[in-house]
Image 1 (cartoon, rainbow, N blue to C red):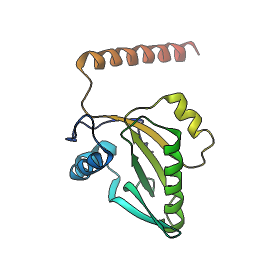
Image 2: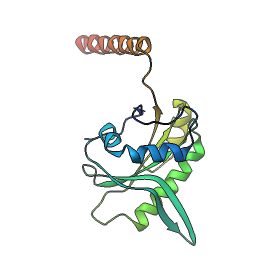
Image 3: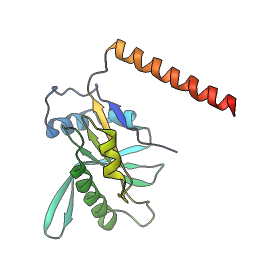
Image 4: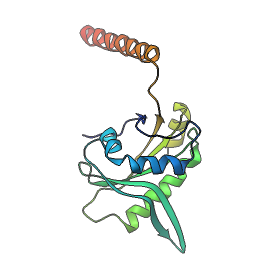
Length: 171
């Protein structure tokens, strides 16, 4: 089963540290092949600023992909700020529009990804707790963290793996 991750390293993108959503989106599209490899091999690119019309108004989804394994549309909303609960409402609106007006009868319901510069896991948990839409909030970083940070994270993961292994042996 394919899974969207909760963090992405987008150092392939050539955007300044203080970038705008439009700059991020344009850079993603310019580097779409590499980005799809970051997301996973079963993603295909549908479009940027994908227009959906609800009532007499046009709305634009930052990026729209299709995932072959999941057989569904994947809407990605880009945020150049930390996650805010109101981002979820916007994405859920887009997912509803996609499912009512774009999705084909043989496809699964659309899923969403909010890609933001940071997130507080507790805020995300509260925001998603009553949501019926399959949505993930992921953060991104442009450059890889320095070696000492990566080394520390690997040490923490190894310690966690050792604890889990010990718990399984005790059972």
